[in-house]
Length: 237
Image (tube, rainbow, N blue to C red):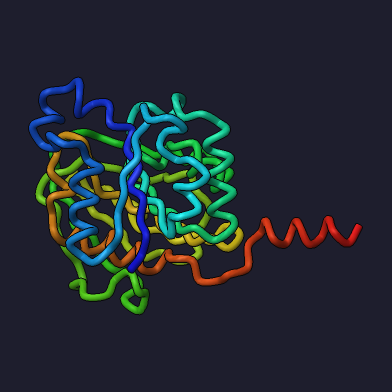
């Protein structure tokens, strides 16, 4: 059983009636329920909790951190970002979703602006599997459709993915690298594009299936940590 922490800024669900109508308990609760149904041990954490809910103890007990964020990027404390990134370097998996491309942890790990083009127009999205051998595609069809979503388009200012798993096509003709795998230190990262606060994207079973597969892929796969390496090097000086 994988230990998952689902993090959500959890602001708009409490202040915006349209968002609350789609995710009345918060996006994190929908994601957590979907992952629990798929066999994971899941806890949630939100921005307004002490340490944003990401204490040393919580992160030490987390195999994979799933991250939703939309507008509160600058409200995330840099000390917590340091803590999260160090745990990823040490081996914790990281699955940032949709607008978390602009989150502090993801931007720091990528080292690039992570900017893109977008359009809110309730468009149909078809997501194509471009690497059917990758574990994140297990059980999926060659493509699947999200009926209503926000368009994200290229250029997407991220490093070239280690593996590109999915590419999206939108009704306006745009395409987007929507499933990108990276390794930073010992940690595996999977950025997954689909999601939106006012469209029920995370109620789509196939989207939760992808996140489930991503969690299983990103689980730590070594007992050796970057922190251990730094400690052992210092001891030799």
